[in-house]
Image 1 (tube, chains in turn yellow, brown):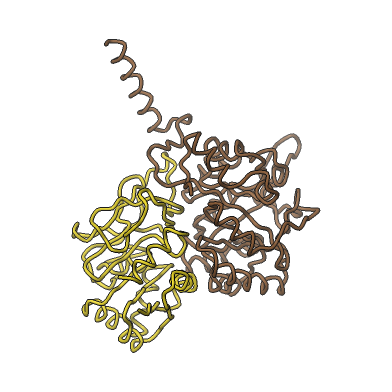
Image 2 (cartoon, rainbow over the protein chains, first blue to last red):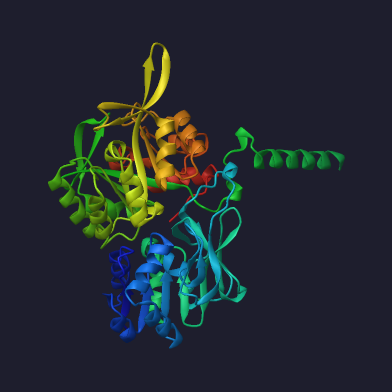
Length: 204
Length: 288
């Protein structure tokens, strides 16, 4: 089944597209509301600032089509900022409204630098699985994934947390509710382990 | 039994000391799950990988796409492509090269060298670079750091700097150099890294020139001073000649990542050998 990757000028999508193609999926880059309406599996990537990304989605009339896709129960994968924007509020440079699919907010890392912890959280780290997610099928225990982010999500509902990661305390590294899945790390930059996750999304 | 209790108490005291601000206890790895990164750097001149010793006398060491794949398979955590051609033509070649590499390498890629404008940065990020490293142009125009950070986020904005120790009237100072290490800017290293962090740099690659290409070890003192002065990750560069040097810079040097070129390019050590050595010395690394 075809993967549709949403382009709204806030991310490099080539890596995501090439990642899906590498595992045998057909992946196309889309940018309009109509194309979202026709998508079977939607991927929302994202890097950069929360407020800019949300403003761009709103200006281009993409918010409602994304929410409709999710309501219809079709598979959805958010990556990095694409996870954070699913929440009510982002606290990056002020308070900004997100897509509001989940209750909660995105906050800056508050870590102890005397322990050598830096912000952004940048590099390869592990995930501790909370509840089974089809995304993580056949993932070797202790797998490392590539993270690069200064903010992380704090969900109000514990039940949506599919994994946590340790960085001066636990933070939420992936979430899932039914068809909606999102990861804080970058599967498209996480070598073989990341490609396994993309394949799992393509195959579910 | 009493002895055992005494040992236990002593152990706890040590742990508390380490968790505090004790200089000997930093960094306290058992608190960290984030692995230390090993980053091969490929100097690229018009599409070919080269690596100089002390910045001059370049030697061709291979094809960048083949090298990138080799490093991915070897377990490199990131790759840095550094464009030393720094011409308009060279930058176009670099963007094409990046777009070819990301078709086959699913790992973070940083590109530096010759990035003068937001458009230069955009072209490389759109081609598939995860991060761009701003060097000389950021010294001339510090606003460039803020512009790139605003557009692509702090996480994509790296400050790269060439630093050197300068002795004037018997006093040592650390200065930022530009133009391939030929020109002293008169800007102090510590002032510049703090300013760049404030402008939006999300990572700092500190290349210490008197160590670069010598394979006699990183500048541990300067690396630790920079790493302690900023909240963002610091990548140590210049001087790697052995796995021991990488161990030193990731512990004593307080670096979050270690960058190296010739030690890997000429096959003296593989990335895997370096990581195994670090693992045996209790530095958390990603083993593949």
